[in-house]
Length: 328
Image (cartoon, rainbow, N blue to C red; front, side):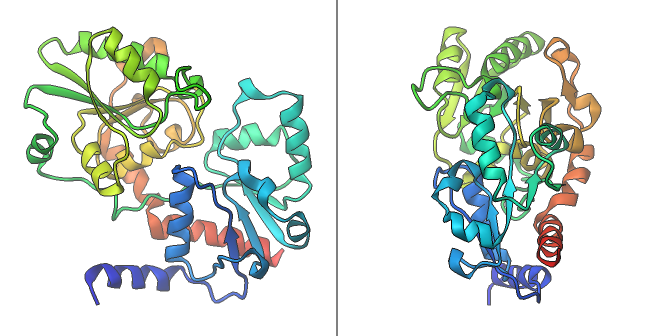
C-alpha cells in the first residue's frame, strides 16, 4: 500500500460514520468547484451512495440543477440544499417563485459563509447550517523552492506576479463582465499595484475558464499576463506558489475557495469583504475599493485559520450536520 493509500485509508476511517444513512449528492457537471467537492466527498466518506433511490439524505450541492431530481423522492427523503450565495442584483419575481417552490422540498439549508446565511434568512424559515467547505491540504500546500517553481513557468526574478483564478465573464456572450466577481474592480486594483511597484515588472497570472473580459482589459492598459485555461489541481497549486499576491475583488461570493487555497498554501492574499474573507483573513487583509492601497496580507494568520478547515476537520462538521438531520 502506497503512502497516499495509507493517508486515504486513515482519513476514511476517521470520517466514516457507523450510522445507517446514505447520502446522495447531485451533479453540476460544469467543471466548477462543486464537482470537486462532490468527488472529494465520495472519495473520503463511506456513508454515501451514487444512486438517489438508495439515499436516506439528499444533498443538493448544486442547487441550480435541482429540477433534474425526482420530486417524489425529494418529498420522501430528508433533503439539504447548499446555497453558495445570492446575487441580490438578480432577485426578481421569477427568482422568488422558484425559490419558494424549491423550499417546499428542503428540510435544512447549508451555506459556506456567515454573509450567505444573512442573505438566506430573508427567504426561508428553515434551519440553516453555516459551515465553510473544506480545503484539501494534500492538493494545496506551500512549496518552499519558489525560485524554481517561478522559473518553471517562465517568470523572472524581478517580476511581481499578481494572481486571479476565477471566472470574470458572463457565459452567455463571453464579452460582458461578470460583475459579481468584480473584474472591473480587479483591473483598477492592477493599475494601483503597478504604481506601487515602479521597480518591478508587473505580470498578472490568470487561470480558469471565461477570462475574456480581464484579458481584454489588460491588453488595453498594456499589462503583461500569462493565461492557463485548464490547469489540473497539481498545476493550480504550483501557480498559486508563483504568486507575490492574490487579489479577490468580488462584490458577491459564497467563498471563494481561492481564499482557503491561498491561506493553506501560505500565499499572500487580500480580499474585498465577501464570503468567507472575514472568517479566514486578518482584518488588515480585507479592503474597500477606496482603501485598496492600505490592504496588507497576513500569511501566518490566514494559514492558522485555514487549518480549521482541512479535509478531516472540515468534513467532520458536515457529517455532524447530516447526523443531526437524520436523527431529527
